[in-house]
Image (cartoon, rainbow, N blue to C red; front, side, top):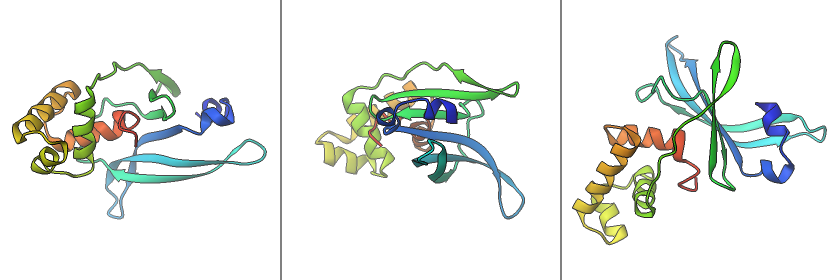
Length: 164
């Protein structure tokens, strides 16, 4: 993956962010699924990946076993590339894009920020029932059942679309 990242020009690398889904062991010796989102990569003068600033999310309760192992998101163009580790090789995973309307993106971004349905309705000047309809459509499009699963899906797949 480092080769893919470093193979791009410096300007192209500016908007690229990685997410990796891994198992980590807790203090109690229990394995948990986590999402590591790489917020900033630091490249040495010799063009080597020197260090990374990342955020870890506990995804154990939400982990979908069929998700890519690694995602590379280019925030300059909103495109995501997903990879999975199979047969001791990292292989590109092709996924079908989820097409969201502008309003669905707005509702999803507010859900992601922790707003409740009444707060979203007030903020977007729409009815409570309209927000609930958008949420239902979002869950259908992302094949999720709960708001928690929808948020997890957003973290995994739609971060670039939401401008995060």
